[in-house]
Image (tube, rainbow, N blue to C red; front, top):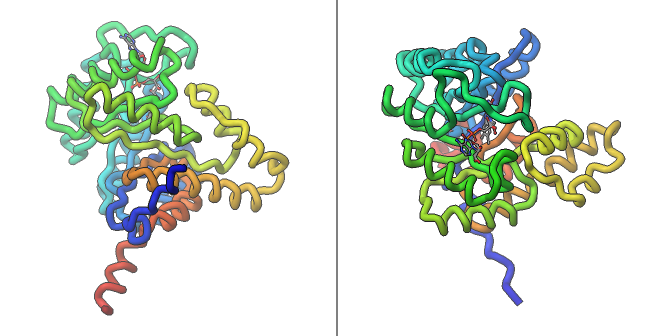
Length: 306
Ligand code: FAD
């Protein structure tokens, strides 16, 4: 029988764990307030970076820019701006890239984006636009030496015929200059490890950072999963069964589920995590605490007192 994997000492101290947090640009003043409360709560955990998504079809171009600019202006955080190729010419996308560089942004999460008609439709590049994420990465790197992250899909992308074809695309993005890949979220760690094995077997050595989505709302997250090709294991549905009108218990279960997942990853040597925060800090903060992360200011005080 295999011995249970030993817990890493870093699990207790949190010293080697790196995290990043993903937010989406707010639509209303109330949403903006929620976002900023979350950013302020998570900021002391000293993430490697925080990223801001780009709405479907480029619909949040200004709001993404404004959020990234405010993060640069008002926090010590390093922002990463998501950018897609959808519904824009190369010239228009290049202008956004140059604006980010001039603003002081040094990290872009480069994506193709979904077809304007939604997932399931065939993607048709905009005439005169970047054709896919690899093409966009190449364009970004030709403009300035940005750090570029890209997406990858442990359960395959809905448009990809095979996982090998998906890994071909990942290779193309790396050849174009991407230095990190962030995974689509998943709930079964074995899925991630199998993918990681295949990626490494294909000679890819860049960090593949697992994307983790805390489940504030099971129905909502199941909807995201359906669209993105991530599977929802039956046991997960079972855990949230009957809790639709019981928010308090739902949150406790969500925290337990996410904690089990990230600790399972840490046990196998994973030390970097990307959290899809959905602009909420509570569960993410608790999971980071379990990972050993503490507010930087508080840690500094304890160290000074010793
Ligand atoms: P690509 O890597 O270009 O392609 C994805 C897949 O499509 C490939 O694996 C390949 O199988 C197939 N494919 C594409 N082009 C070709 C081709 N020429 N020939 C053959 N096969 C091809 N969406 C947003 O709108 N805004 C965001 O901010 C955003 N952030 C995201 C962050 C992360 C971490 C992830 C995982 C996804 C995000 N998405 C976002 C969703 C993403 O835009 C979609 O999943 C989109 O459908 C694919 O984008 P991509 O960059 O992976 O595309």
